[in-house]
Amino acid sequence: MSDVLLLSMPYGKSYGRIDIKALDFGVPPLGIAYIASFLKEAGCSVKLVDLMFSTDSLNDVGRIIRQESPRWIGLSATTVQIKEAFKVAEIAKKIDPDIKVIIGGIHASALPEETISNSNIDILVYGEGEFTMLELVRGESIDKIKGIFYKRGGSIIKNPARQLAQNIDIFPYPLYQDLPIEKYGNEHVGTVVGLISTRGCPYQCTYCAAHTIHQRSYRKRSVGNIIGEIEKLKLDYKIKRFTFHDDTFTLDNQRTAEICEALIKRNLRLEWDCLTRAGHLTKPLLKIMQDSGCRRIQLGIESGDNAVLRLAKRNETIEDITRAVKWAKEVRMEVIGLFIIGLPYDTKESIRKTIDISKRLKLDYAQFSVLVPLPGSEVWDMAKGKKLLEIVAGGWENFGRYNEANIKLRDVNSKELTQYFNQAYREFYLNPSYIIRRIISIRSPKDLISLLKRAKVLLRLLFG
Image (cartoon, rainbow, N blue to C red):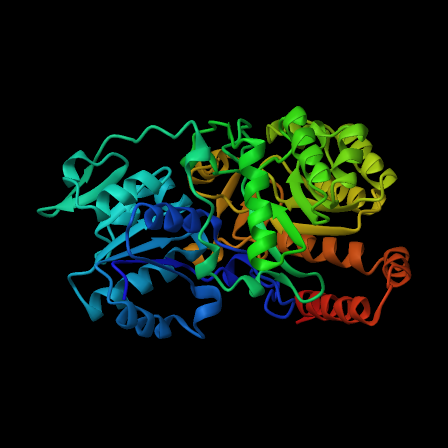
């Protein structure tokens, strides 16, 4: 039994038509795991459950709630997960109407009034949640707790915002001991845990809603704090690989180099990867990253058209991207290119350029998604005002990035966007030269099995 039960929603719908279960793919819920560890260190009785791997269906969540019999249930959900969060809240209230249900996450922070209007939600946390949750479960006076919406007498009340923590070293490492750590990563590479070395991103990309929580306030953990977490994960869980889940890991090149130097000095012999931007990469930086164990980078490329990149406020060019990919390949690093089909200023011609550059760069993998106007983003405001794009498929379940398009542009309709999405995958992965490169890269039976699994998922995406 636990006083506080924290539930991370299943995220399969986030990947739409891509069958991540067939890829044995899992990602740890680090945001709510930070809250769990913060509460536990403060002496609270906490249980963290990742519903992606703990239940066969949401109906089974009732068993977990009855087993833990909590006074508080905390839910974290993205936009595409919000209906499932509401379903879990409904199940909790049917089991025990006295359970206080709290919701947080990026969707709640972007659309707080709408979210807390759900009859089964008692309190909504907006912004970062560690201190807010602790004050709630400790029973502080609700009208004095910053960073929440709550209900009183049929009215919704908003308390003032909570100031963001500037020293993020104060937060204990995520509560991995409550999570099915063997499920994170995939069958081919094994367990891959996640780390967050910074919070916030100063950029203003029009399609991103991350600032709804972090307010573009970029804050860094110390190198010693990060290395301490990595060493603990290796010692406690025998990990061999990890991923930095920062929005842009190499935003501060000097700090990135210091982390790499610390990894090399401690001779940890771990492999890792990260998400970053081309404009923050140099060949010397990529070399020290590779020396310290970085084997692949996920590069936000988004579009093959400089005008579209500029209007999306990416602050980088095709030339920057081409140079960064070249440098990464020269230091023997895999590159995964991330692309968006249907940015607000996209045309049929610019989408064609995006597909073409994905092939021309000779990437190891490409990940295409259809633009989703996430609440809290500039694109959301454009869509609501029907400026340049319009939402054509309502319902939050349609806000997965790898589904059929739920928008139309001024010159490209939703059916055409979906066709371009399929065409991008088809042209990239069914290109004979790419198939030959992948076959040549096979080094073991395990590599072959992984390749066949990926091929099966791809064919189901394109023709299923």
